[in-house]
Length: 155
Image 1 (cartoon, rainbow, N blue to C red):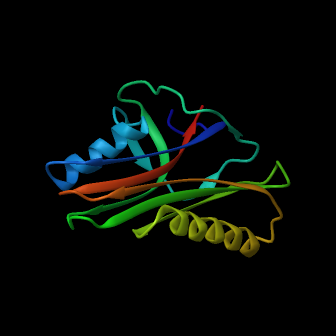
Image 2: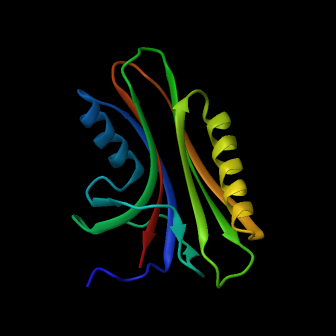
């Protein structure tokens, strides 16, 4: 049965160069620790009372629910960044919110933007925020580079 609600989450990020855009993306997944799994891209909700954990070694080939931001570029010297933010509500019976953002530029600016997006998303839901957790990565492109950041849901 595939309809199991995750109870844990973690944030992870990585970047890589690659022979092609897909190789670069794959390398960024490997650098983030989730490269040998089958990612199931999800929308941006953390289940109620989901607990943050340290990144874990995931089983090879597992179906992994993940919200992520990524950017790939082939412009030598370009700075690219990806970030995710998880807004955790004060009320543990309510869901949290994940926002993803990637762009050309420094990770500090990209992370600031995604945290602001998470704050605004919770305001739209009329939910008070207990905390916002975020992670970002920056990459300076050599030939073909990718920056990748994610929130992984786990059981």
